[in-house]
Image: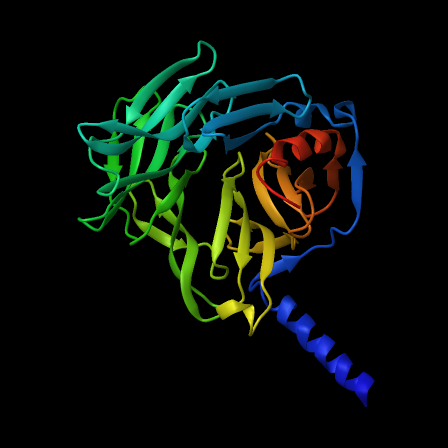
Length: 337
């Protein structure tokens, strides 16, 4: 009788997990191959760039690297900055930084040309950061434009700013969503992904989802309907897919349903989602052919961050072990395992 009761509990638990990703296709990624040398990668994968940044001792550091280890570039600033992004070719970075002026503390968007180490102020207002907030700047696919979120607190307005990488031609659009954070443009700029308000159908609670807008901010559709936090949504170069991470707390304190970390890829046209892994991940980008995703990941919160590749269909999961030592050193002073 006791064994039968335990079996029922196991079945119920599995049903909860299997029904937690509505519309998902599940794949088997249990097997992980190890890549201990960049020459073991195909040529198209060796040139993929990724970047990391951290704030320590009151300063900030950005490291840009290619999978073939031929590109290793570091930018450090003695002042604190945040919300970093790196241009597709790795030649420039953007970030937000506080500026004290006229008895107010404002936040401005800066562009740094790494080839000549020149820093430009390209967007912002001389308004106190308690009045207006800039967040989540990111490059367009060609690196020529920067998209960012703008929140005006007293006006209760959320906008999306688009500016050339030289600070010219600032355009502000008014999206048809109350919240529009972290704008991520498609390769052709015709649509934009944002974090928006939306109901979590798994728990029935209000929360935050990913929405698709057109280039002028008109609402097109919800891309997700589950999870509380969606991280690093990234378009494939062909514009047909997005890869993203999702965390679902499982409702209040995770009592009714277990918390879940998911790594999914979604077909933008059909809305079909493929669950690649139940891991905590940070998407770094795609191969040029849109066939492979580069990501940092860990199976659980006590595991170290490691670098992986996976095919968009969930096959051929590869652990890039030759980055393990670097990542362990990088995270040693900012995170305990």
